[in-house]
Image (cartoon, rainbow, N blue to C red):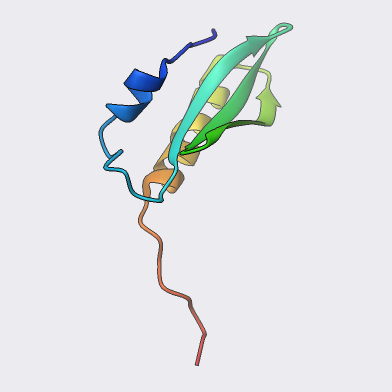
Length: 83
């Protein structure tokens, strides 16, 4: 599955209030009989796609993608252990 998104759609995404935080999306794509989790990171000046890992079943890949998406949506925590 490949999804094409226009610049206008990226600008209208929820949470895209013009801040410096990138928009992150985790998705699952079919790849030669296996399932691959990819993470797309949208910055103001471009898009980066990271191929994370390939899984033998779609269910495992979708579970991993949900976990990665949830982790990306969490707020940044302050530095731990800093004086």
